[in-house]
Structure formats: C-alpha cells, structure tokens
Image (cartoon, rainbow, N blue to C red):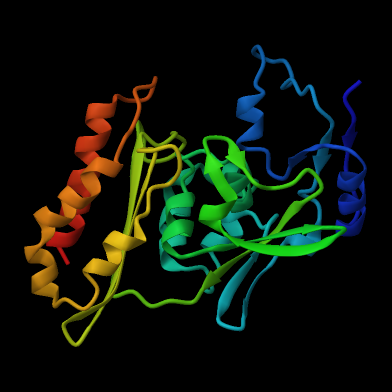
Length: 279
C-alpha cells in the first residue's frame, strides 16, 4: 500500500528520506500532471509520497553574502511580489501559470522534475544558480547544470532534499525571457529563450544566453558567450549572424505533440538574433 506522509519538520523529512525512498511533493503542479488518471479520479502514485509543502522552514527569500537565497517550498507567487527576486525570474513567473497554480508551484519543483521545458530553468541557468541539497549526512552545493543531467534525470540522491536555491546577485543592462507556447500561461513551452547582457561604457562586460526545450537539457554554452565579452555594443550587434551560426549546431529539438523540430529551431535562432539586434 502506498503511504502518504506529511512531516512536521525538515529534520523529520530527512530522517524519513534516509529510511526509504519517497516521491517528494511540494506544490505538486508537475507531479499531479504526470500522475493524472481518469476524469474525476485521484492521481495514481505507485511510490510512497512525502508531502513537504507545509514546511515553513523552507519558505523564505533572503539576501546573504552576495546571493539571493530561495527556500525550496517558497511558492512562486511569493517570489513574484518580493523585491529581492531577480527581474528575469519574475518575468518567467508572471506568465508561467494561473495565479491559483502560482500559489502552489515552486522553482524547486522545476528542478526536481528536470524537464527541459520547465519555465524557470533557462533563467536559473543564465543566473548561475546553485542548488543546495541536504540529507542527514550533510549539505552539498552544486551548480544547476551539474544537478540536471537529462530529461527527468538528475543527481539528487534518494536521501536528499532540495533545501534552497542560491542566485548570485548580478547586474544586467538588458535582459529578456521569451516563452513560446499555445498560450501565454497555463501551457507547456514549445521552447523558451533567455538572454542577459551587461554593457557599461559601451563595452560588453557580461553576455549570457540559454534556451529551453531545444535539447536534452537547458542549452547554455559559456564558451560561446565568453568570446563576445569585451566587444563594444556595435561590434556585438555586427556579429549577430556569427553568433547565430555558433549556436546552430547545439540546437537539436525533437518532434512531439506540442511542436516540431524545424519550427523550434527556427524560432529559437530568431529569438537569439532579435535579442542581439535590439540591444
């Protein structure tokens, strides 16, 4: 028989996870869709479920030593209205779902779900987010690109929980998040694009690009970005076709029920080009 347990503290949750495997559920906005059953019947779970949404210990957003730190059960609606939340993250949250779902959804859920179509993931990649994992053995911190290894795949251990997400405080003079879907909200992305640049005294100090739903994981290529740091804005714009060609071989979307690979690739490269030429 499947067991459903609601721990009353983080320590209790960690002890339970160390004892046996659980499917961890916070808001459940991803999991409930994955486990959906027939109309008007409850979702079907074949594994024990640990419900952690009530853990107030994990609901916070704060500034600490050069980072914005977000507790893993913090609803994204709270982040949308918090002054500490990075602008790009607010951009994604504002169109990612209905207000009702945003009161339940968490960005940690996007990480644990590990779908390349996750709305907040390209932004977390661009912002160099660090994922803090905790077990009774201790804490470890990993950059997000080392946590997510493929569609629905990650390195989070059976006895670990996502404790928080740490985002380095950064400054960008231009940034954008674009989601392409059947609707602006309440739709799974066909693809998404995130760009961020910091230009000061006409020099490119930082240049970051990420795509969602065009490869097995979020696509970000730091080695490409670094080639264009140090240029003037006009030099960067002048190299737009070169930059598009650099990303072209790495954009390898698939055909599925939401879209086809040719459309995804064309739109992804167009979004990249438009971001650069409109700086």
